[in-house]
Length: 208
Image 1: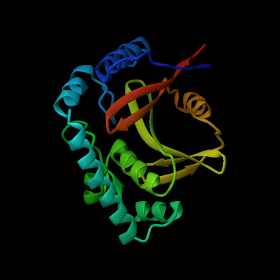
Image 2 (image 1 turned 180 degrees about the horizontal axis):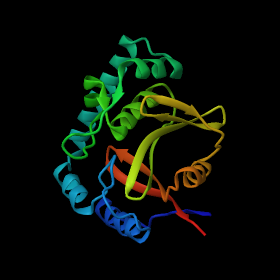
Image 3 (image 1 turned 30 degrees about the horizontal axis):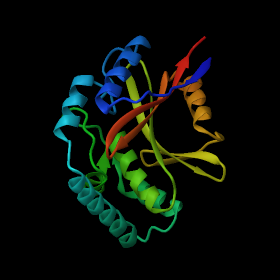
């Protein structure tokens, strides 16, 4: 089994999305991709509709950060362990009812439920405020995908999967990609960004 590091040339988001769809078709990942939308037309329309000015983006970022900071202060969250405990007691996984949508962290925080990418983006914002450098990743197989958040702590990759914490032995993302390929037959490892909305392929699996 070979893990290939994937590097993009300089493309726009729309061009990247189109190429992701083509790559996944090549990998025989036909069917509906759950957990997040990987349809070129749908995402392209969403990206166009959600295009905002720099001023609007900065204003929204300030609102999100102040809400996250208020949440951390109100709930006395000072450490990773504090946040994990809050997650377990106050949030739940719930799939989108009207098709897959990417909710903002403040929306997920208000309702205290969401599907995997909703919780992953919330985890990303809180972990960043706690001093970590989180990343939102996704892996997939047979047309389905799952999204989670990772940080590096004590020299190894640690995972927040919805509201569950996992400490791994992986020292880098290539180790994570290889583990997911071996255990879950994952074909790819992707990094997601909400602001701006973006999808970036990190690793592709060649099963030979």
